[in-house]
Image 1 (cartoon, rainbow, N blue to C red):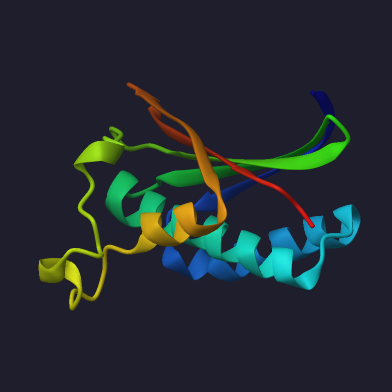
Image 2 (tube, rainbow, N blue to C red):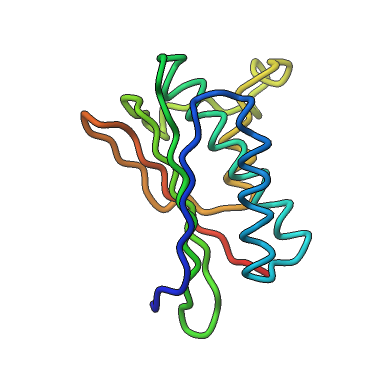
Amino acid sequence: MMPMNSYELVLTSSIEECDRLAEFLEGIAGLEKFGDKFLTELGIVAKEAFINAVLHGNEGVPGAVVHMTVRVTEDAGARVLFLKVWDMGKGFSLPECSDPLQTDALMKSSGRGLLYIKSYAEIMGLEWDENGCWLTLRMMPF
């Protein structure tokens, strides 16, 4: 796999930063010549990962931030996008996350973020230490 381009953004841990995130992704899409449909999917994935980092990772801690890194590489002639989201939280276990498709969860107003993320991206890694939690996602740009 050959590295191509890397883009980084640091956001304050606030839902109001979603507009800055969208502008960041639109800029990348223009530079990388992503199609509109892929940009929409990337936007859903990145926004859900960001919101989870704000609400569940940083949990409203004053001064907390969320780091977003987008890396576009080439593997066997195909472009691959890696999205890495880092928050200052203690991490979580994917198998312990509730399934929003279970009957008792269907009418809940939240809890679908990971479902949306997994609809468009592959979860490549989830790591945490005393400095925070990193979620790494992979997508295939088109």
